[in-house]
Image (cartoon, rainbow, N blue to C red):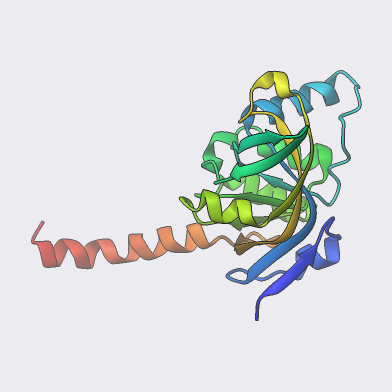
Length: 198
């Protein structure tokens, strides 16, 4: 059965999520790609306060297309960015800001999986190429920070209403659907070579 999760998430809820589960999000979440990650980490190094508390938050790897109507932003398209772009930044980001969920596509590296296990965070996979569908789950755009980084790289503050569907692809116990697929591929290589006579 699909789960609807209310943001921010507590550690008990996060640790209770199982790999392969389908979830939807309600509440405030944030877009952040590499530039916003770097910006936030720089703030932390300099002892400056970031605009929002990310504890228990969901961070969406997304460079949205936004339109402004009567001084109010709305999401036109909000498809995921490939998460590997954030691999070098994510472990420190999770540790420093105690985020509970990362939303994206393509999975993340072992150091990030380890940080998720240590600090209680999950990776929620969203279907690539469904940017308009994803935007439908965004009820409201509350605001934007660091717009000087450009529309796709800025930190957007969004309100989700049954935002998803999202698949728990990396859980808070070190399990990863991506690692499972890699193992399966490795297992099948000899059989494939035999069939293909290579």
